[in-house]
Every structure is written in C-alpha cells, then in structure tokens.
Image (tube, rainbow, N blue to C red):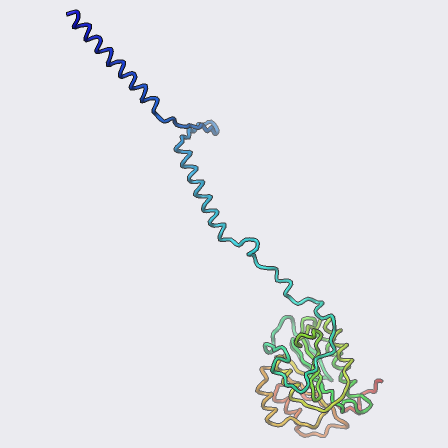
Length: 309
C-alpha cells in the first residue's frame, strides 16, 4: 500500500515539472512588442508597434504622393523664358540709314513689311496736317514725289514738301506709327533698321529725329512713277496716306485707279497737288483718287510758296 502511494506521488510531481518547463519555453518564444508613451496635456496615449507601423505607412504614402505631384510641376529649366529680350527696344533705331532704294521692282514681293490694315490702335489717335489737309488715326504713310520737276522754281516745291512733312511728323503722338516713301521712277523708303526690311516706325523722339535726318537728305531727281509708291503704301495698311505730287503727267489711268481702290482696305488717301499758277479746274486723276478713297484733294500754287535757301 505504501509503495503504491509513493508511486502515485512521484507521477504527480513529474507532470507538474513538465507543465512548468513547457510554460517557460512558451514564454521565451513569445515575440516582444515596442510600446511608446506619448503624453499630451494631461493625457497619456500608448502607441504600439502596430500603430507606429501604420503611421509610418501613411507618411510614406503621403511622401510618394507629394513626389508624384511635384513631378508634374515645371522645373527651373522648364519655366518660360523672359520675353523682354525679344521686344523692340529704343536703341533699335540707332545706326540711322538714309533709306532703302528698291529700284524698279514693285513692292508686294517682300520689299515692305505688310501691315494688318487700318486702325491697329496701340495708343490714342493723332491728328495731323499736310498743307491744311487733315488726317486722323494711329498709322500714317507719307508718299511724296521727289522727281526732278520738284526742284523747279528755285527748289521751292521740294523744300516746302520736306518742311511740311517734318512739321507733320513732330505733331504725331509717340504711340502713333508712320512710314515715309519718297519716289520718282524708284522708291526711297525710310529704313533706320537697314539691312532689315523697312517697317512702320513709332513716332517717339528717336523715330522722329531719325526721320527728320532722312527727309533733309532727300534730293529731287529722276522721272515719275506713281503706282509703285501707292501700292507699297497701301500694303502697309495705314489709317491715312498723304500723297503729294506735282506731276500732271503721267496720270493714273481709270484701271489703275480701280486697282488702288480694290487694294484699299479702309485707308483714307489725301491728295496734295502742286502746280504752277492758279488751279485750272477739272476733275483730274488726283481729285478722283482722293474721292474714291474717302480723302481730300488740295491744290498748292508753287509760285506762292516762300523761297527758303
């Protein structure tokens, strides 16, 4: 009996020791967790490792999104260039050229920069006059005869024409634009930007000074060809053309007058006619030119012009 009792006690002790060992082993194999304590204004928040990992994942996702959005923005090298350098500056008018002589070639093949038509207003309108004939707008073209007959009467016609042109230029506002075409059987165009093609010039101080120097250098010579100069002027699309000539011959034919009317896209053409003695009347080609193009005609008796050496 005693032996049996001892045997039972030994078996009970053996099972108890086995359970303790197994529990210890299980405890040693358990993975340790990281817990951070964050205190804020009297409260305590426990952040487990899982919380930290979740927060890290969210931060990583946000960072990746920011990088993706940032890649859609232009880099420094992709930003638009400063366009100030491509705009015309005041010193473009330095190096004044006397003018562009186009010989017998008719404009329309790139001789002159084409305008966009009348009333391309950049600033307010200017009002100016040539021998009392008024023109109003923002773009003006002066087409003046410089054939040899303009040097007659002791040079009074050419000198008076040049003086009136300079006076008109100085009355233009700085935002107005202009161009000057002297013609005989050839065209002499104001071009301070040579060797570039002639174009419209702003009537600022620089443009006016350059134009005055150009005008003063012009001399009368050669024969007369009206159409090339008028075609060139209309091609620039001004608001007003002041057309001055002393040539009764050659006259513009009816076909040529119709061609000019067809080429005209809204430009007023004023005709200033020089002649010796009182006006003889009649409906000459200059009167028709002005009438068909919404302009005015005026006759100037060159014998009455003042003599200025």
